[in-house]
Image 1: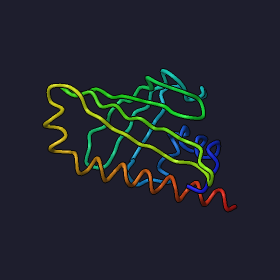
Image 2: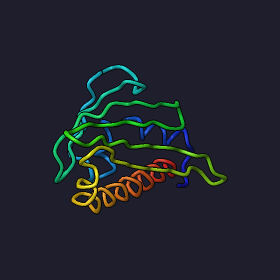
Image 3: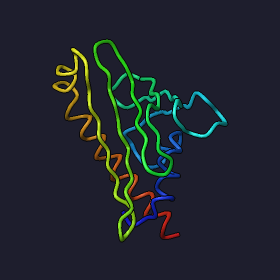
Length: 135
């Protein structure tokens, strides 16, 4: 995207602001108000057509990447968010994987919806950050 990595990172780690740029999120509520988003941060996330889930940051590299995970019976879901500087701005990499004995069933039932939400998030973040860069 045509936006500086620092600007994209600021928008990405403002998780309570995600509703500004993606319809794949109905609600995100941080547990630690007033503290920076970092390793160990937790947020309650509600997405359309999915039950709410508590996500906990398990990997964090300031300005570059964070990983968070949620757990439900039989499934551990891990989501990676990475930024890479490019000659024209920033490359965004979003990955989601599911592990556990019910993961194959979750992928079968929810795989298409999850892929759609990841695409919405990538497109929304790009449009939002590029709009900020133009102002």
